Length: 389
Image (cartoon, rainbow, N blue to C red):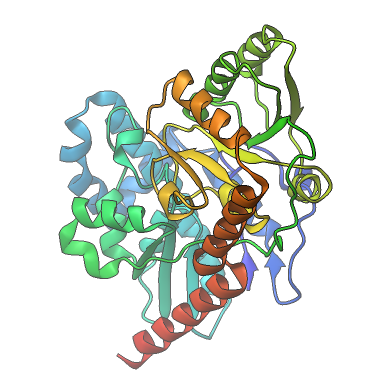
């Protein structure tokens, strides 16, 4: 199995600066192909790059079919479409090089349904299965302004399978492209069992954790606004950071003395899970305006942590009224504060029941030991069927 990182290619980050990634024994991290993608990506939006794409008859036809849709939203969107086509062309070239190294059938799997999936979709080989996941930013048109994702329908029509990570994602794509419904298959992500390893607070303090980058879509500052309305002791710990953190820091600095805040910044995943094991956590809070099906919520559920989250995307597939609180998609600070107050008033028995319900949802829907073998078996079966047809 070859693993090709593509995420930082456009950012022009050399492969040697990437941290070492733990890889299974049967996997090769192909940094040589990453460097090839990075080299080709340098030509994107340059005359030579555009010319190369239009010289290829398949990509030229792809662009011509997409142009009327992109043009509805203006020239900037057309340019964005052309950029995506060039990025997909770069991926396609490298994948063609890789496939030439193999004599046996292949599965091309893209984690995101963006230009990497486009490159795979355009590689039309008889003994190759082409599959992409779909999450959130690569799935929901309403997240974009204008509401357009380059080559969205064309990618789905060319790929053998698109596997959204939530039922909401499947429903969204099926409603957008009912003629392509047969190419969609739900496969949620999964996390390992936290064995309900978290514990509640031993005192009256409500201990709340959130975890996300401080981007506008995550609305972390809304948590600070809600905490300003709480008249009971709360300790809020947030994991995650980016350049927008100053606005959140200003709001938290003005909170009353009975509200304590820790902005932990970025931590790696093992450190986050260690925090769950070693510190009491009463509630995991997510107030995003848009989501796919967040891994952070899956992890909290596996540790038996009740969750309060906005009802967006696939969130309701991992949060139930028995395991936590479903907030409105656009909650007010007061609505969030009211949920925090309810969480603070839970009896030990109620907290224990919520913890078991959260872990049960993890077991039923996002258990890595179940989800990933099932996905792998699906891929093997589909490749076999394609070879037999």
